[in-house]
Length: 332
Image (cartoon, rainbow, N blue to C red; front, side, top):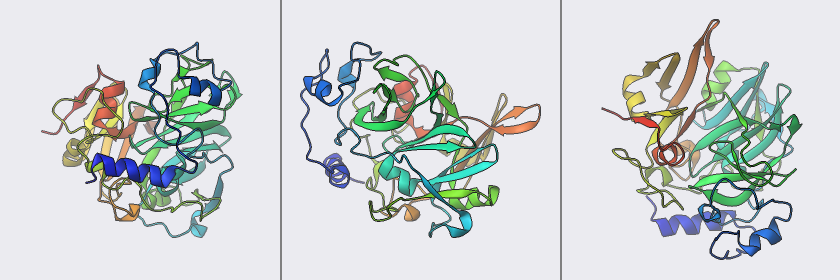
């Protein structure tokens, strides 16, 4: 487990591609440096205090989104270990896998899946893997990284208005679009083996430049075993470790350890299941060597049977930070 200072230095050494600019203390109104960098952002509109949005280290687009994604068929995929985690998204028969070995280094993929414009997002500091419809008011948006965090979570921006969006909630928190919310779509954070089994005709994202980053490695070694999250000073949940994995559906969360013990939880119209076989992306130096944290599937009962439901596998502190009135069902 890394000490916090070591984690900070490792984070910066991997991601900073330009000299770090030391930001002044964030106050209300916003720091003057923001207005120089964000010339089109309407800082008169915000739903959160600016003091809650510190720099994560990299500047605007310092963690570059993937805007022209390249895919290959499963049969032509480069060597991916069967236990490696991917975000599996299927829409209209179009099945796509987005490996975390790539998303860890880019965090956002602007794509079109089954004719639907989507933003496939991953925040390593929250282990939040969420797919959004990137249409707002009937117009397709393109998303990038601000280089800022709020409650340790990725703050995105849309290039059309330069409004800032909270990744965990999909809500615009700064700028002209403040108060609007992106629609989250059902997706799975699953092992490469399970994606191949359920979508043998699918395709997988590959790097545009395989040498651009050390793909397959994890710059956050030991993070999901740390005592405290990075750049977070908010309230911690009671009775559960801050970085314990939880499965989030709306205003409820279930400890992954509880689900692991039971294997299956039925609550209302939801069915939540766990099976082994997927490595943590935030444990070992090589993602494929991470400890097994298993696969989670969340489905809801419909008139036609079970259908995938929107959910997230994140950390307890994240759920508590963004859903403070929510309920965490802990392991017995």
